Image (cartoon, rainbow, N blue to C red; front, side, top):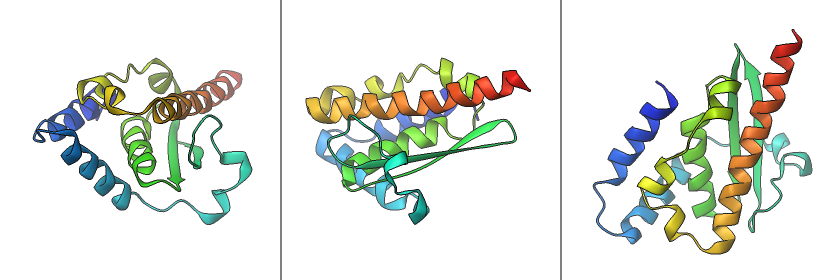
Length: 142
């Protein structure tokens, strides 16, 4: 599935909810369903700067695809990172770098986040794209 196909799927899922309390509940459900990150990856190196809550993000590179894993100490933030992982994980570095994450606006997530959470969202996206840039550089060196 392409990044845009996954985004469209998420937009469709969120379209069944009428208000943001229901959408937040769904985000919490997504957080609870997210696979647990390896406890050894919950370290300072993987901590994302710019998030009010703690968010750990790990990336692996396998078969020319970036695979993300994450965790957070805040349930809404964990749900948000789970959405980002769903969209960006298992894609090539170039696809991640060039991804337009339009689903965030289409589902109304950006407009319904506090300024601190919005800054955290931007920090998560930036870190995921930084991993993709680093892996893309490694590919070019091969």
